[in-house]
Image 1: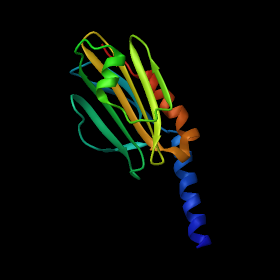
Image 2: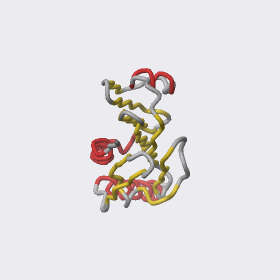
Image 3: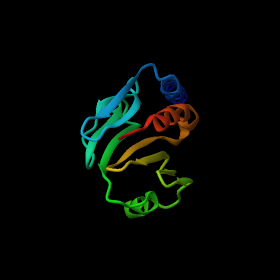
Image 4: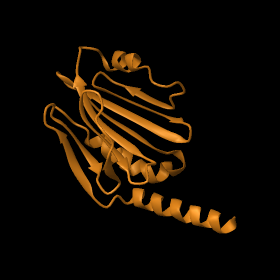
Amino acid sequence: MRVEAGVAAAVLALCGSAVAHAESWAAYRIPETGTTVDIPASIFTEDAGKPDGHGQRFRSADGRADLTVQAVPRTGESPAAFLARKNPPSGIVYKRITPHFFVVSSVKRDTIWYDRCNFSVRYVHCVLINYPAAEKRQWDPVVTRVSHSLGGS
């Protein structure tokens, strides 16, 4: 039992260090919408399907984290109205809404979920990230870079 716990701790430490030091980044672009974002290609190595609208879902090789980049046509809603219509889970820990974007984040079943959407004239450009809450500190620089790099025309 102690050996198994030690092995599990070592695996978590290795996963955490891989996250903290994302070795390679790639610029991801949705051609149809102009959405751009930097993604840590060394972490999100698996294709996880398509979201609504345009974009791509990615998953970490161990399946413990995922990232979605998506863009949907803007219907004229404000960021606050768009967010309300999406009916986010209760218990939001962090929320910031401006006239041009929103960011929300919380914890659900030991997983942190983070959602940022930027509003352009024609599209809503979004990035959604889910990752283990126990690894928050290791993920902070990754989430920050992804969030700050999100753009679109």
